[in-house]
Amino acid sequence: MKSFFKKPKSFNEMVEASVRHNWDRPALRNYGQTPMTYGELAVKIAELHIFFESCGVKKGEKIAICSKNQANWAVVMLAVMTYGAVAVPILHEFKPANIRHLLAHSEVKLFFVGDVIWDRMTEVDLDVEVVVNLTNFEVLQSKFPEPAGILRRMDELMRNKYPAGFGQNDVSYYRDEPEELALINYTSGTSGFSKGVMLPYRSLLSNVLFAAEAEPQMNNLSKTVSMLPSAHMYGMLFELLFEITIGAEVVFLTRLPSPKVILAALAEIKPSVIIAVPMIIEKIYKQMLLPFISRGSIKMLLNLPVIDQMVEKNIQQRLIQAFGGAFNEVIIGGAAFNREAEAFLRRIKFPFTIGYGMTECGPIITYAPHEKTKLYSCGKVVPRMELKIDSEDQYNVPGEILVRGDNVFTGYYRNEDATAAAFDDKGWFHTGDMGVVDEDGYLYIKGRCKSMILGASGQNIYPEEIESILNNMPFVKESLVVDENDKLVALIFPDLEQIEEAGISQAQLLGKINESIALANLELPQYCKISSVEIFPEEFEKTPKKSIKRYLYQRNKR
Image 1: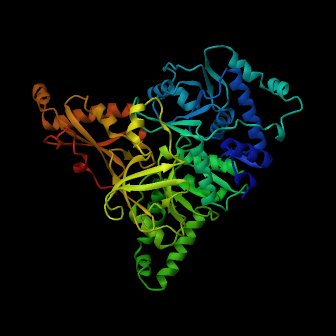
Image 2 (image 1 turned 120 degrees about the horizontal axis):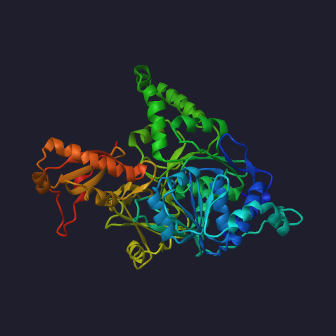
Image 3 (image 1 turned 30 degrees about the vertical axis):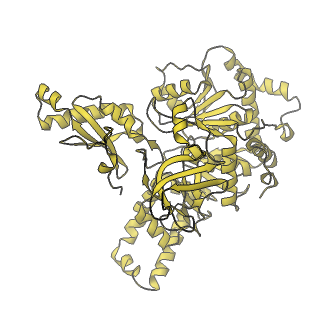
């Protein structure tokens, strides 16, 4: 472990020490391209600091980033934090109207945006002072003329500020305080409903320290493949920020991370640790392993004593090599994992583990190393955190999972009511998840006490938001959106009076509703789209408060 980890005073101090120590080592690159070194990264950060200052950005003001994964995303993110501004990473999957709303809600001053996203936003009026192309750092829009000139004169401005040239000793970053706001991360959702999670620097620091404790073998010779959305805390923290603090190299998959693309990249790069969501591992299991182990001869061998262990070892080694062969473990999180796949991977002793976390915890809550984890568990509460089950018997009766500690956020930005509802008077954050723990402290998730649906790639999907759209469609009286095999299904109770007035048949009704669904899907993020519709002949059962009893309509996953 490097010396700058021992008594870190601030997150930015760790970044500064790592940049200086690893000056000539590779830092960031897009897959298939030449990497930039930590020294080159430092120069880009210094240039952006000049740009921020020239644009009048003050410490604590907001700078947003919205793009698919790429090295420049990381450059801007690091520049924002080391300058002392507040980063607002926005999911590139959001629609233009969503993005505009979030920029306004978070009071953003500068906006760095990817080409594809910007092309979709040409008709959207943005209330920000400057918009910059994240790919080539060209000014796209500005309320005053200076920014474009600043970027064109950057070489001159750098020479004026650093006449002897910019070197290691010139690296000096803003010193953050533990409770100071580092970033606002908006939960996945549709326009107007996303909540801005305020994460202080202590949360980032605690999560980075956890990663160092969990993966002590990682150092400045390590590599990581970034395949999860950088705007998600899971990917941002464990595929980027931690790696930067130890001087590792981060390789960004800029293409759609299909199993074929992922396996090719892993085989070439040979990462030291692999961060994944269940969907990725499940696809590899179904496409690569399941056809093989389903063969009659292999199934027979897997049922023979002694022979089964030899076959399992062979499958394990093939899978490890397919993942690059140099990793310590695969860490899976962000959604529920397929139990059949988990059981088989445990059987062959594949080195993987499942963690549990939330955006509100920046993100980690529980974890166990692969050699100590338990089947269907998501580990034990991590250092600097406390966890308890709100139940009369936490070992046998599921209750809501409550947490508190250094990782926990400070509240929802400009949303006092949501913040007050999230915490009790003793400072416990109510996660909205149900679970139990065993006598060794291992957590087992049993379900959700909130209605939120966790998408296959880790997105938070709030069904009420989609239902509010469906309920406004013709011939719909009320609706429920449920998750079935990672697909969103709309359960519709039709407006019988409207149907009678329109004089349409039941067969015509489904066609009309599907037409409306198709139009609604055009405005919804990809992970919120409705895949199918079911017509219910009677009203949904409700509580005395007239809320639908959602648990009666849950669907089994996988």
